Length: 360
Figure 1 (cartoon, one colour):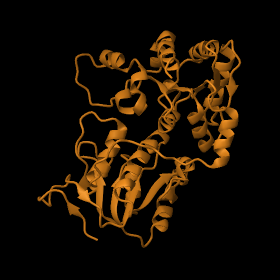
Figure 2 (tube, rainbow, N blue to C red):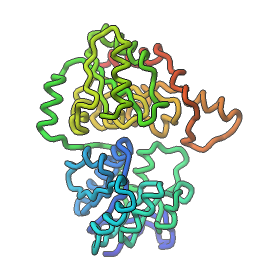
Figure 3 (spheres, one colour):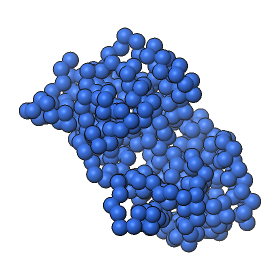
Figure 4 (cartoon, rainbow, N blue to C red):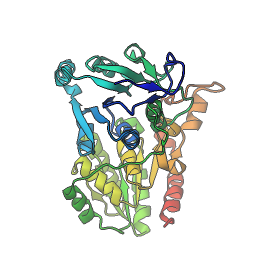
């Protein structure tokens, strides 16, 4: 197999490749839920351009549970909980296999090490400025530099690097019939429902439970059911209980009671989703459901719900201006502080919610 480049200069490492004659592509993106949702749009853009490609995706164990029914993709699970054994297991799983192209889409030392188990002639990574954690050492081609990209746009840079021109994100994440039926029984089509996915991966990124409760009471007063959703961790369960204790209304608590495909189906049935910087916000985007994102620590322009950036409630810009006065800071710089989410007020969220509820 030979790869052709769109540039006459064969040494131009960021030139676009043509995979029309290629047979196999390996994608390395291990985590997290929101990021793999972005990556699905990129994968499916490549599939539309190159339907002959056999795609193998090296993916984390948890993320696999969400995407395992994706069409036309073979998954190889990388279980980081196994420590150093995870690298040997990956090498064993890929023994004797050679890919035409590797898309190295994760900037993390463990991904850099994992990539050593993947045999591929063309190894595409981020541009030199972003190829940190040693990624530039294990790649020989890079995507074009991007000044201020959303994570999804950054991923689409990989599709562009292999000759894809239709970069508009679209998602088709299959859900088993039983899981769809579960969600439709919980939320019959047309039922007005606000789904609150209150917990982020770190407690400091969570909004206050009494403020979530105030939003829930407002939605119930508007005739909406409110369902709390999330994973089974003690942090998520405790936050849900605190929200229930603070509210005057009856809320439905599904936290820790659903699988990832069931949660995806619930988010599809929802009218609106309220969430901080967390995976379910991006899952909802893949289903076309409006999302109100709550941001203080991370730049919503980079990590916000891609199709719903206009309904984000953010204090990030203000906080960053205070923490770095008069300075030009790198795109995606995180704001620091354990109480930043307290600066998001209830009225701002209600304004966004009312705006979405008034839409058809």
